[in-house]
Amino acid sequence: MTEKNVTVTLSAHNLSRDFGGHAAVQGINLELKRGEILGLLGPNGAGKTTTMRMLTGNLAPSAGSLAVCGVDLLSKPRDAKAYIGYLPEMPPLYREMTVNEYLQFVARLHRIGRHKMHAALDLVKQRCGLTAMGSRLIGMLSKGYQQRVGIAQAIIHDPDVIILDEPTVGLDPNQVREIRTLIRELGAARSVILSTHILPEVESVCDRVHIMYHGRIIFGDTMAGMKQREVSLEALFSKLTSNKEQTEDL
Amino acid sequence: MIATIVRKELKVLFTSPLAWTLLALMQLVLTWIFLGRLDAFLEMQSQLIQIANPPGITEIIVAPVFSMAAIVLLMVTPLLTMRLLAEERRNNTLVLLLSAPISVADIILGKFLSLIVFFFIMIALLAALSISLLMGGTLDFGLLLANVLGLLLIAACFVSLGLYVSSLTVYPAIAAAGALGLLLGLWVIDIVASDVDSIARNISLLKHYEHFNRGMIDTFSLAYFILFIVTFLVLTIHRMNGERLHG
Image (cartoon, rainbow over the protein chains, first blue to last red):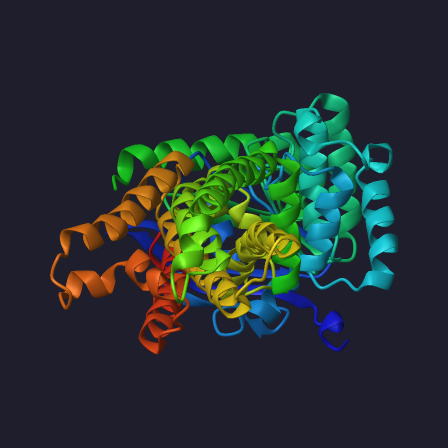
């Protein structure tokens, strides 16, 4: 359990990815510490999802290096992936399974032993407010509950790094608040990367923010630092991402 | 980890009505053929007695049923393999498997084995049907075993090809049509080849299956089947890894 004590959970250096000549992500550097929630902002098509897919091992970077809890993701993907929980934009749900069946399958994928299975399932269902939904078919659940199952799937194995791609899209205001509380709870002892379009969400949840534009990180600061300098995130975001469009033509 | 995937695939397979419908339909069709052959045997029986070394019930009833079963499997397999990867991709669930600490090879092998288990059930039913003949005669168990082995191997070939086609596309329907087209092609190639020693004849899966059907476990056929299965499994794994690198 020495890895558990490492303070830097995720480090990416010079991460790049091109799709047939088009550079989707260029030279991204990221470092994440335990207990930190990082907000990843950016207009549509800025490369947020591509970055997240690389961080979770779904997409191989064209260049750069990537380590999770000190394990190199590119050379030891299986060991590194055990530390990551990922909720993609579209939650990866099997509609024909019940919530319990699905979570059991995910737990087995993450090598959670039979004797720990029950406790892990109970804990994650309680955390995500799914306790009463165990025997319901996922396909029959509402969007909000499906999103919760998606989050449950990402945290069931108690990962050190949790990567959430727009987790609150399509939820009602109460659910949004609950999910934000959950994210803050999770971020207390782990690292969370949160991609979103909702600026107040970043302000209320995140400790640090990165703004991506045209495949690059063009801004990075802590929320505390921004508050000190009295910079408004919204003004900054529109200044950075709309000015550039005219000057830097890709 | 492979067992986890197999379990999940079988669970998903048997919660859908497709698997049950296919099992029932296959059983219906094959039993119908079986009864037809049984009927023909009973009619021929008086003439068979006059021959010095007459063919037994295994040759007359069981072998033709297994021969037909291979063609039925050829039609059915694409319907089952289409969902293996194409549907996972379309429903965005492939991400779950790819993000989990499990290798692509384990995922592919798990999916392959799940359908082998399914076909094993189907072939076991067919074998049980044949064994029911023991009530009124004796069986050539060697021939029956060769048929069971041959059918299982050719089903595995169909599955590995179907799995590969499924890895190429996002649309299950295209995966099914593609696999069916290729399998039919491999069948027809055998009709085209009239020459005994032509290469086309050696490529045909059903031609190799005929050897098993006649009770001959030919090393060349065995090797061909195994090579066929391994080749397409490796191609599928390669393709899924390539998607991560290039896609």
